[in-house]
Amino acid sequence: MKDGRIAVTGLGVCTALGHTPEALWEGLSAGRSAGAPIEGFDAEGHISRIAAEIKDFDPSPVLGRKRTRRMARFSQMASYAALQAVAHAGIDLAEQARDRAGVVVGTAAGDYENLEEQHRILMEKGPGNGFPLAVPLIIPNMSSANVGIDLGISGPNLGVATACSSGAHALAMAAMLIRSGAADIMVAGGAEAAIRPLTVNAYGCMGVLTRRNDDPAHASRPFDAGRDGFLIGEGAAMLVLEREEDARRRGADILAYLDGAGMTADAYSIAIPEPDGAAAAAAMTMAMKDAGVGTDGVDYINAHGTSTSANDRTETAAIHRALGADADRVAVSSTKSMLGHTLGAAGAIEAAATVLTLRHQVMPPTINYETPDPECDLDYVPNTAREGRVRAAISNSFGFGGQNCSLLFSSVD
Image 1 (cartoon, rainbow, N blue to C red):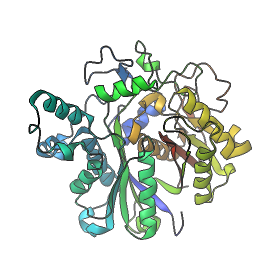
Image 2: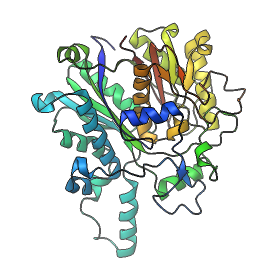
Image 3: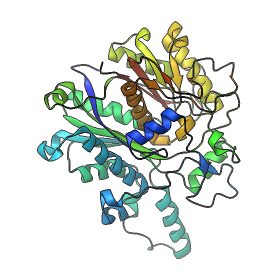
């Protein structure tokens, strides 16, 4: 990225470990798992019957009851996190030019709850029956559209769908829009609420979900030799991005800098990552080059780390390729071990976790790491958070179809 630094001045989150950055950080640093039996629907008979659900989420006090009823769960989460992030940043958007503030939100799935319900009504009652607002509930870009409505801003407004890298791509695109001069402030991140029968069944049939139904707290185990698939999760995270000079001019508390981004494609498979990790490594290399940071300047990587056999092995190879000899020195952890895999929101939630890592100078652990895998041979910060100097950190996100995005964040000091 060129022409000045992009400052992160606000965070908002809605996760299975808590609905504030403070609660999220407390859970991550304590190594707490959000895994539990699914309660949102009857999961009897499903291959995987566990998830990292948000079980106490009521956005109506923040969004209002009427707004809440007209929004799907993933949109509710996005707006909830966005309003929180703007408040955290201390920005009065009413004082800003409406068309100079924008939104980018990554969502991979959209609203499966209403999709399932409308399909049921169609099959049972026939054509001509259904909810008139079904389409604006279901389509993935409604997360970004609703955030713009709730914040009252009319600058660039984009929905991004790049599978599990959607949230990271949203942040990269938001930073690009600021640098291009198209906006002064961007509220960006990801949201996903896809723990539904159709989705859980589809991922289960694909063979990528964990089957440890009798032990949900230990089911997500990235990089461990006993990993058997990911724990599906849900949530949202939104970050406020602005130019450093603008943030300093208004006396903002700068949390970290988004100094670099790298975006590549495997061009290999719709579902399997490129085995040697060349394209994923290239994304990390691009992010470092963009930020002007060498491999010796990176101290931590928040890994994509899904707890699937192929992904963890490939990401390890990619980190070795990108960082060379420094790969053995850098700490790597997967917060999916605690939060599960939140699909399109993962890149944003993990970006927020990376900002908090830089803020606190503490690296969250990879929990449930018990048996080393010879093909996963990095320092995965096993089981216990670690204090240590973190100057720059990379957050990796890789999606089905081979869509890769690496973000590089730097500490303020």
